[in-house]
Length: 268
Length: 275
Ligand SMILES: Nc1ncnc2c1ncn2[C@@H]1O[C@H](COP(=O)(O)OP(=O)(O)O)[C@@H](O)[C@H]1O
Ligand SMILES: [Mg+2]
Image 1 (tube, each protein chain N blue to C red):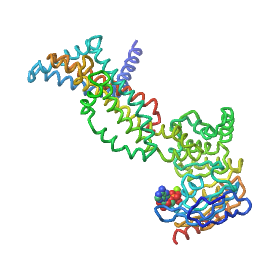
Image 2 (spheres, rainbow over the protein chains, first blue to last red; image 1 turned 180 degrees about the vertical axis):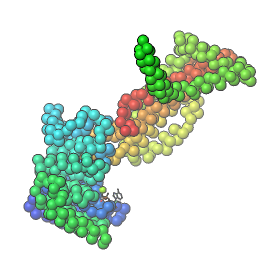
Image 3 (cartoon, chains in turn purple, green; image 1 turned 90 degrees about the vertical axis):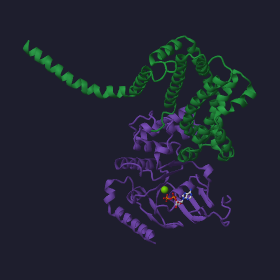
Image 4 (cartoon, rainbow over the protein chains, first blue to last red; image 1 turned 30 degrees about the vertical axis):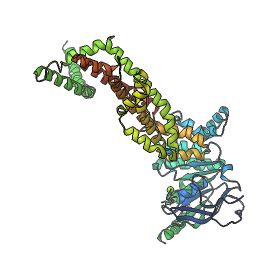
């Protein structure tokens, strides 16, 4: 597979260690001439949740948008199990749910939209929706329009839409930061449960260190720009993690370490 | 007996207390919009009675309203109103059918829009009435002419607004569709057109008002023997002042009702707007 980049030196795309899903090699991204990413390498493990944490403006959103193929890259290569973006099904959950759902469609049609795009039959769509509704334990009326729902319900619907086509990768860009605390807790649990059910690879951008650690198998800490990997902190507490986990010695230790690295990087 | 009367008295007192409190607010709100028209009619009546202005120039409101009502209830004014309405709607439909797709297409290709932006802005800023002589050369003194020039004026407004609606589409909705695998065509069909609707409707509403204005002007100055523009001008020339005011009021009523109808349609179709 040839590199997409024109400026990056031609290097063989070497695979990651066993269990790697997404390999990023020699990634280059510039804005107005100055490099945000310059030869960035990363292995993202399969069937795990990786939280991305880093200073404001370090390029977290840009990174997952490049993985999603939403913004072009200036060099390097991103492969999914060796495949290109075109051959990979990706789900994306935006921070701003108001501008992510389509307000001219009923919520149910929003969730079904990616399935309709893929040409699924009416029957198959119906069955998949029933499955999703059951697994999310939806208690509100999905025949309403998105603007008739609460913020939390809209974001729940966004997550259902992202998961509907059974994607190989789910990208979440600060999915909780526009929600109130109660709703955040609820959706966080849903997400954990869906992950335990499906084992889908997830990349979660978060600005809340507790949330980043709580959900993750691995926290990716990024530096200020030009962005590099500061550290990848592993957290292998088995799931389901609960409220008790938050006061667990292991959790507290990982959180503390993550915070220390973050502070070191911000001060640098 | 005693007990009963006290009881009903108490009830009546309670009712009297509750009644005005409940109604005062509602009634005030329902009546507020009527205040303006009532004041206007009163001022008109006073002005007409004062004798400052000759009755030949300003008849009182009642005779005028009577003329209006009689005219609209099957008189010549009704035919004129219907003719003007017909021409306005014809012009509007032409403008909408051509303008919406054109505007959305232009808006979804920024380079295409930039290249015609000046032409659109220039003619949008040119009063359509200034083009009447030109249209006279092309179409002659015909009914088509009045519709054509009104359609021209309305068309530019529709194109401009539809294009802007598309250009200002929420980027994140487009991204959402793309990440789900929508092709360029599906993004256009499922997102861009819908995103442009609120602004397009602003354009359609402005366009129908513009079409009415141009049709009425055209009816005055392009040979015509019906329509509200003709009615106003004709009444003035035969010095039937009461009929002239009635015809002017009919124009206002028509414009106002068209606007209301379009607002209702807009609210029905673009139900998510502003929410
Ligand atoms: N379209 C763009 N044009 C210019 N600069 C951009 C653009 N998008 C992002 N940037 C810059 O790239 C950096 C990273 O942005 P972003 O990925 O949104 O940061 P984060 O999500 O980590 O807060 C920021 O400094 C931002 O100013
Ligand atoms: Mg961001």
